Length: 525
Ligand code: 6LW
Image 1 (tube, rainbow, N blue to C red):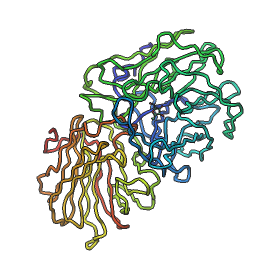
Image 2: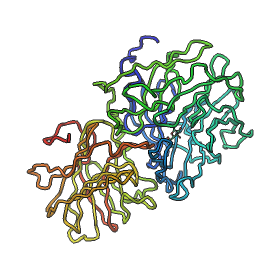
Image 3: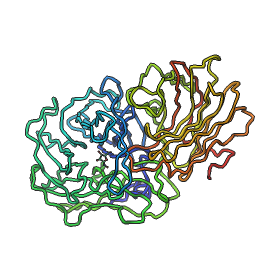
Image 4: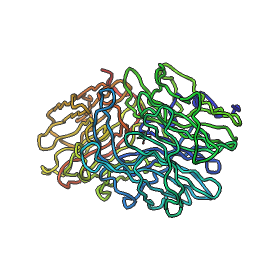
């Protein structure tokens, strides 16, 4: 590995380069800039794009699925189903596992939209789609070219004049298929052919193919995306196989180790400007059974001598390393960071400067069938404070039922602190996957003027606070152990404002997230 200025501890595979709800990374180099994309499931805009020139400092520049007309996420709902070891899997539909590639001046993203037809687990279908842009900085992406294939995690290989799609066919067994595609139209030019069953033969997914030294290397994720997650690899002289599995598979896994970063897998290799190979992969930071940030993106160096198999170079840590290279997206576009749920009615939101107006929806956060009024941002730091001021709406608006601040994962799992207007009280509400954690606390407050809400978070706990009279002090409504929000799930925490009621406009100001200035109350239980 050459000694590059940016080859520091930051790149040891133990610090996320994209923290907080950043699974299934894919990356490509365009000129001197790296572009990285993640899955986004039920969030709109979808498919966040991050850039970096040194692999350490990352900027969230925008989102590829950024017009409501591109695709509907109305069935990006969440199922809770039994998982192999008696726990439950929290599976959210929507945008899964994109691949980003650049070819002849055009940047492509190929991805899957998983549509939960109903609220019954198993009742789903998936559609694959390709987006492209001729200027990735413009944020102007095409409408999707949609093609049916019963699977997930499509990838693209530009191979001389041909373009191939590799995709995981789901079913009782997950297998990797390959077919030739007309990249301009999405038309399949060959029948899909099975090219690999995987090494572990357990949830073999997330395929990417790389041409190197006359070989086609096929990298896959296996073992399911949680405890037994891994990367495995095979190679062939032909894209159609036969693929020979690496004798030292799994190529990388944290399973069975005591490393702080667990569930590592689903990755993408790439070369930097100097020819050095790297891998981006997903993982979770796990401390005492808690991994509140969801699946995040990690980077590690890859040693890949000519004609030999690659080797992923991770420096293991048992404890949380003290420093993190994340720069909280310095220079990131504030507009890029805002997310809504599924198919939002964008006219209901005015996010200008520090003033935010949200038109309340009749549906609350626990519903997913229609547009729910919510606007938030991904939690990026393990320790921080999110806060907002709720301005007293026009008096007499009894039809406004609740407005406040929430840490939201999906319609089954959220923690909220809000003002309940008809009941004239501050209300904390908490719901988790097993519904074992279902609490509600109220505190009578006659609202005159505004009220402030805060969520203070650490790796272990979440504190829900409010301040009515700005002279203080802050009052704590509830402290929550983060274990109640740690699940085998696909998504991650998003913190934002919500408003439930009948079309009333609610005014908020001064929304902040990941604030690291310490406040006067301790949030550790
Ligand atoms: C994704 C699959 C996976 O489609 O999780 O970790 C699924 N791997 O490849 C959902 O993100």
